[in-house]
Length: 222
Image (cartoon, rainbow, N blue to C red):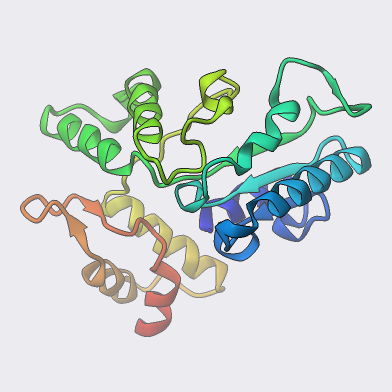
């Protein structure tokens, strides 16, 4: 995903291509629920082996809302209170779990803040953490459903992604044009914005897809 790519890029030279960045997708790496026991064994072995090779490894798990519950339990030893697991100090490792769960609730909080004339910067993390946690706990299809990782509070922080407004999407377009080595032509920027779907229907405030489709839309309007 775009988020995974950005995180890897800023944390490791080479981004997702770094040998110390390990990116997992349910659709690609864990597609069949009937193979769950094999996935558990393979994932535990992979994490353990790569932590032994590099204690500062980054493990990215995308689309947690599409991952079958139970698989993540093999990570408990690496996220628990012990400093050393299987002879390796894992505290330097980074585990990041990305999910769309709670998105509707986050959007509602952002919308209510806007209607109350509160800046999005005024929305506190403490307002959103319990909302996200509850959304995960209420979703039996989420990878963290009834997970010891959540129940034992082993996640250091929940980072909500607020919905993007029109000016945020504009920045994405300008940044993408710069990455392509192109001049920031206003007609292209405006065309991308005009083709982007915003919600709610009345206010047209937030981008339905964030900046996910910006690159492809730019190519269409060049």
